[in-house]
Image 1: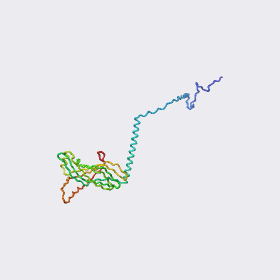
Image 2: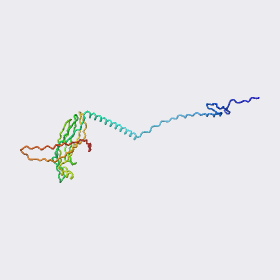
Image 3: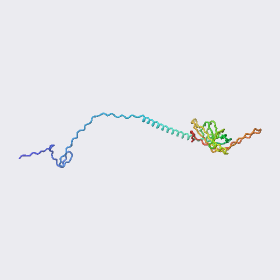
Image 4: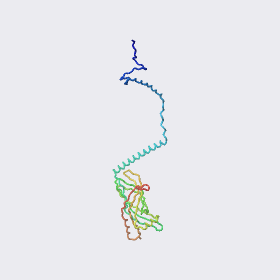
Length: 274
């Protein structure tokens, strides 16, 4: 009785059956034949290609000018802020050391000698004298003033003009300045001339325009334009009567009436005052 030969090994065409529950290549089978894992071909590396770096686009002239203007504006702003900051520090130090106070001006006496308006030609002739008292209350600060131009107004009508020379207001000092104003044959508006002829008392406003500087020790500031306005003054005309000479001594004229009109100094820039 011949023995039947059985294949003990499997081939790719006839694989051996795998019992259920066996693990083949890390996977549990249930009696089915596992599928073969496909082979992945190796990836071909492309050849190296040289790629030059792109150059940045050229800057236009407009962009360069704009950057230059922005830089200049930035530096100018920073320098201006620094100067303002230093000026504030210097002003604070000066205030602590010297306690500066502004000078005061008063019109202490005034006399309207002549005020005549011609009814036919509307020409104005006026003459008045007054005294300005300037006081400097500071102990170590002096004020220097240039030539002063003075005008007197009555209801916005320019009555008379004049000027006084430059002067210095020393520390802790009082300066009395006599002033004489006059006008002759000045043309005025007919309505203004009629108003002046009807009045017996004239409200006056006196303006003094000059340039003032400050001196602290050896330090001097530049001069700035100022305007001193004196208001609240009322005057009546008081004509001067001349008499023939006589052997008897002449009686001196009465002193001008004393007043105390406050004046306010203001900084003048072109036609504005602050």
